[in-house]
Amino acid sequence: MIEQFRVSGLTANQRLDRILRARYPHSGRQAIQQIIARRQVQVNGRTVWLASWSVANGDTITVLEAPAPLPPQPQRFDPAWLIADEGDLLAVDKPAGLLSEPKRGLDRPSLLQLASAHFGPVTLFHRLDRDTSGVLLLTRGGAINALMTAAFQQNLVHKEYLAVVAAPNLLDATGVIDARLQPSRSRRDQMEVTAKGGQRAITRYTVIATVADRAWVRLFPETGRTHQLRVHLAHLGAPILGDRLYGVADSAPRLMLHAHMIELPAAIFGAARRFTASIAPEFTLPES
Image 1 (cartoon, one colour):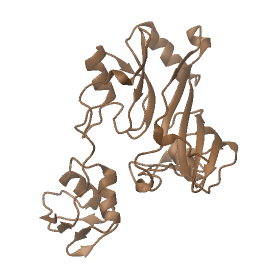
Image 2 (cartoon, helix red, strand yellow; image 1 turned 90 degrees about the vertical axis):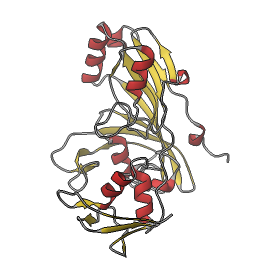
Image 3 (tube, one colour; image 1 turned 45 degrees about the vertical axis):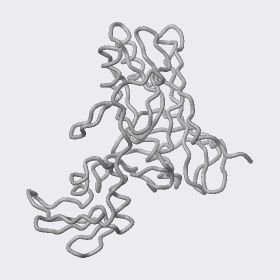
Image 4 (cartoon, rainbow, N blue to C red; image 1 turned 60 degrees about the horizontal axis):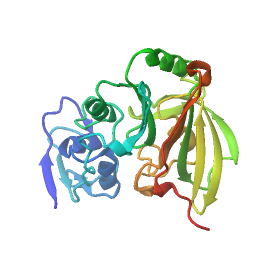
């Protein structure tokens, strides 16, 4: 159904995708970008395919195809998400599409909110991107918080991720990506590799298999920078499939990145504490 509206109330020009996100609050950024890329949006009668197109008061926007709505968001904690309850520590398998914690300006539930409603007050000690699935740790407070803080500050927490990426690419069979990251100079929601400045970011990886135009990769981040795995892989020509920020959004039905395992160090906890989130069927290697 075609919709047309006139822009008003702006204090300054805004990007087209932001105008549309405000117009369609129940659609995600990916759905908005898809209709723009498919040339389903016009500004003042002119077809526009750039999400960054500048829109001003008085402009008339025509939407030829409404963006798809976000899938229904969970309204309560699903017990099936619980990996382990060790009293002071909870390990949870966060589903893709669910925020780790509340985000200002987004009226959507988060894992932290749902877990707090289900278990009582809990603390989230690290986070995953909304579109990433996998293991997250929460604590109930007490001595565990100081131990967790020490483990993360000393980079002693071992993490393993699984990703499906585009191929061919510049990845070796195994390797280390050591590339500094800084906020993007062109987009506020992105990071970028920089030769100088920024923060050092290190990712070890192993390619499990390559089939046709995709590869399965195990990732072992040694630092925890924002979007680190996504930027590092895209930097080597191996964007994660379904990545709306650093790759092609519609190359997969979701971001193909899963936090498979996390291990807390014996040096701090007395014994290693290891938690694993099961791998979803979409990550399964095709039969040869």
